[in-house]
Length: 210
Image 1: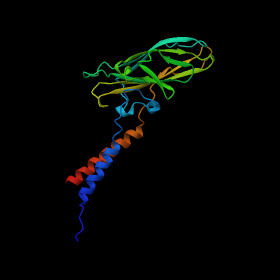
Image 2: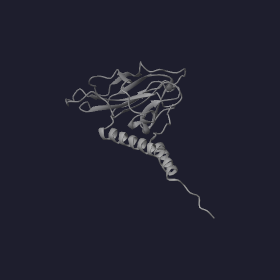
Image 3: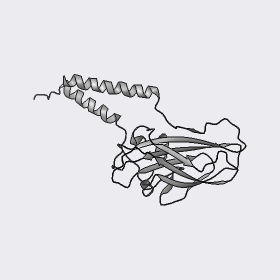
Image 4: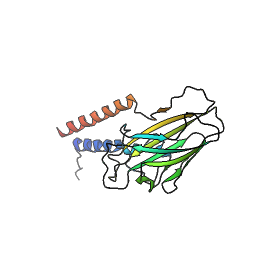
């Protein structure tokens, strides 16, 4: 009985296809909110995008002990094309100290020790919150925020997210704190690896076809 021959070219095609799919990030979206999976950013929606702006209003420059502050979290992206769909935005916000509460239970929820949108809250890009500061006014508080500007096309492509780290000191804290910064940026070596892998796949495909 003759043995079936498998050509090296076909094997190479299969390897390239497998590598390609392994490189694709998970495309699962979170229209009903995101938990601790979002603590490294909205990676299922692609790379971080500076065209999306996260705006926090209402937080003090320095907080008093056990004081309530009302604020607004806004995700803005004026250049994004939004399709005819009600899904336009999402967020995840965590405070290191004090008590953080969002005002509308229909639009927001707590998940994995952080606040995020609900399915109803996914229809907005602005959410109101209240923060009660800790008793220790010699400390400082970090707010880790991830915001996603969604274009409403039903898949992650075209969505643009960003991150923000806000540090708020107490009135008796005199440390030199950077007030705002981006939470995550791709390292240089990550970009180099991505380019090398992409070029390798292109080269393999060229040799297989030739």
